[in-house]
Amino acid sequence: MERPVLERYYRDELRKQLREGGVRRNVHEVPALEKIVINSAIGSDSEKTWVEEVVKDVSLIAGQRPVVVRARKSISNFKLRAGVPNGVKVTLRARRMYEFLYRLVSIALPRLRDFRGLAPRCDGRGNFTLGIADHTIFPEVSVDRERKAIGMDISFVTSAKSDGEAVELLRGLGVPFVRRSGDGTAKA
Image (tube, rainbow, N blue to C red; front, side, top):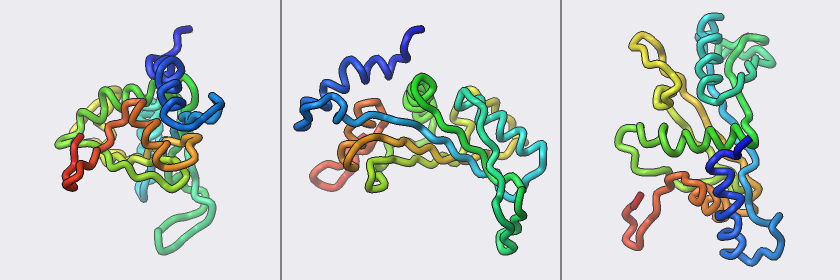
């Protein structure tokens, strides 16, 4: 099997660039993308047909079937009962991870209206999370007027030691971060 385009690019070119850019003597010290986690909340509408629809759409987007997450305990303020489905999640690694990242960067994000780039804010440990309000930016999902939009969080987990390294890695993989110029204005 042939490797995905982004995986080949990372292994052949980007890893060398990142190694030369820092003071890393070992190839294993170079930051890498470990996994991508996609989370989607089902919300208070936990009808069986809605849960199946969310699972179907997320599996089309991710390329593998997600796990349905159920509430562990009842919380009356949120009208949540134990055992009721309240979200789906899927973890992508290796081949599927690179294929999803390629589709996200080259097809889905450019379809966002007035998109100028992502803010390069990580969590302090080298991980980056992106929130998407509407899942219809992915071409795999059919667009119907009567369907509700499904929001999702996409987390990129890296082996980077700092946020700067993570942003440098993800920018090298094609994630469109906004660059700040000296006068404070943003450039894509």
